Length: 283
Image (tube, rainbow, N blue to C red):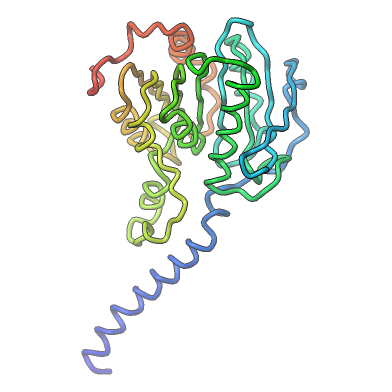
């Protein structure tokens, strides 16, 4: 084989591998990103919390399942967006935490998750979030500035997008990602994944268009979404804003017992931002 042929092989083989990977990523990315877990025989009733199962409708007609947990009559409403894995039946610890705060809580499902119809994808998540917002503000009558949006992991990007341009009372981003593109680049640092991604799930841009108070919660030990992405979200957010740093894995439930988190939530619920950052650089 001539030197020229060796050079061609050295160039074309890695290129072919990269292109093949990119095509596979493009075709399978929804199944790689969205992982609805099995529906478990669980509900808030199992932990002694009364709830109502709602069937909302997304703008394209897809049914959106939600749990409504009524709290104190004068308390704000919190709309919760779970992460990419599982479904509402995996979220009882979050239900218990929100119930302990006395808030009114709406926990929603996404298209293709749980009992809902459709296929899981980015647009379906956003339509589910819009349906939840419409239900809380129109059907239930909560003023926009009495609604807090709370997203965990991939749900943080959904919450950030839902908050953009709306007059909500607050935005809570827990273990949140900056974007799917950033996570993919971290997972495959030597491959050009960006051009093959049609799913963006981008939180930074929407966060720049949000003017509500922002609470960022992230663990230094997060093995799925690095702490640096949480810091990036905090940096981008407009004040008032607060960063609570945790220890533990991405799915660790110890955060529910953190006094610092409970304090931050109480401050957000009462709009007491005296200890929050009031400048763009977090000072």
